[in-house]
Image (cartoon, rainbow, N blue to C red):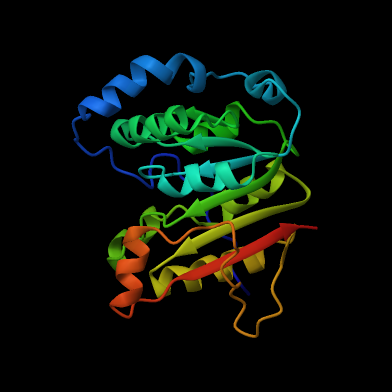
Length: 231
């Protein structure tokens, strides 16, 4: 008999706060654009239409790094709202700089743990999509328990999606790709969007190739996209 997955342990975080100084440009972006595009963490539900100043499909991005892909996607999909969570200040500053310089009005940023944002700020059935691109693979076996994509967390994500809403994950670690595919496949509220025999999706046009990803592909590294939708 298969044992149920353990409950999601909030004492085990999927990220480590890394030391890093803001560049002059990132610090200036906080000062210049922070009031417009940053949303403070709160322990009460967020009104998405009020936060963005309009009613539109909302995509949650978890862990956007330096924001290169985020800005590209937001620019190419102006009809969607993008709520972006990242804990690292240099990455937040970098995305603020991109958003301000490119006049991207459909991006808002929360500098906080995405799990607590999901628990306290986002209502069930409030999101039309969730993007998780290249989450920390925690590649050593003894650290695999720190990986973000675990069954209880995926169930939480699914509860926040509208019917037909999509979860899109991408990773360049094959064993993590296998884990992501397996975990999402076991979630009863979700169904795979691809008909590919291996279960992995073709890279959607909206997700750009980052410099890091291009470098890896030239070295022969693989990249796997997993896209599921809520039933």
